[in-house]
Length: 397
Ligand SMILES: *Cc1c(COP(=O)(O)O)cnc(C)c1O
Image (cartoon, rainbow, N blue to C red):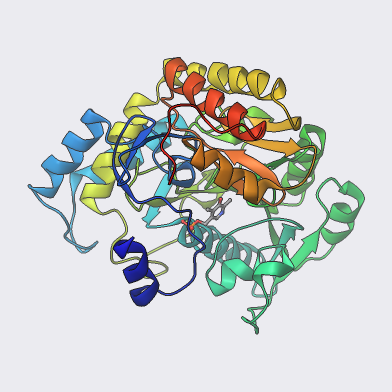
């Protein structure tokens, strides 16, 4: 337990960690320092899209690290261009800006929306509409855009220019859009940290229409829902809408820090020289990993995400204490008959399966490559944890 003591001594106490020291991994199986194997239904919060240490991903990353690891954006490097080309070919994006995290990607779409508003309608058009119960990141500005008070305390004052609406309230949106100050609407199509809450399709399509009519940019935070998580490359495809701006991060680098701002037709040329930047953005090693993620995430794997998500949902619904399962593809939120998700997540780990929570729900974000055998092993362990029975054959701590 020396590591855990040293962590407590040397790291800022920002996290309540589970009691597992992870040492290595393959696919959806994580090896603990305790000698046990854990089934990973978290993928590092939706990051390890291809699971732990996919051999092609690891080879590409190692090769790039040994060839050229960084140059800054003062020079040209191939991996960032290759990745941007893939994103433009497979999404609505006409241009891409690379950064390093979800919060930064959202900062990027916020800056692009404000620049677009100013360019086309003058300096009075800078307000961004956001939804209650949203989560957009931990920087001061993305906190300001986050519609959950619990993240706000201690960190005032916030930058101005964010107004909040209730998800599903079209009349409220219509009213808010009467203001000439509004340049964009920012949504998560499935609110992740807010408890895996999918927005209603009719609402999203109508909201998109209203924004189109007023040239208000439709901005989608796809940091969690993007990169195949829901069974399509972007969750926007599931909703039948084309965003003007979208942010990606989590799964994009396959485990390395990598975020992207996707700029649609309207905003393709909004950001010019000097308007935005990032020292690490477009890092060759991260982008080489990202290229492998996108190449592996073909129609076949996307279809498998959809099938596996449906299978997990069906199996979970048959488990003790499970009241309902929300979400899409492999982004699942489990509502329990009693709201004790925190304790149950710890019990799941004890039973040998790693799971997440979101608000009062258990949340699963397994690697997109999850096999049936891995799924079944994890489900079996979850069922044991949920029924409160100690797992057979596992060592007591
Ligand atoms: C995780 C997440 C973020 C923040 O991403 P970081 O990489 O932690 O900055 C933003 N938006 C959504 C929807 C997320 O799920």
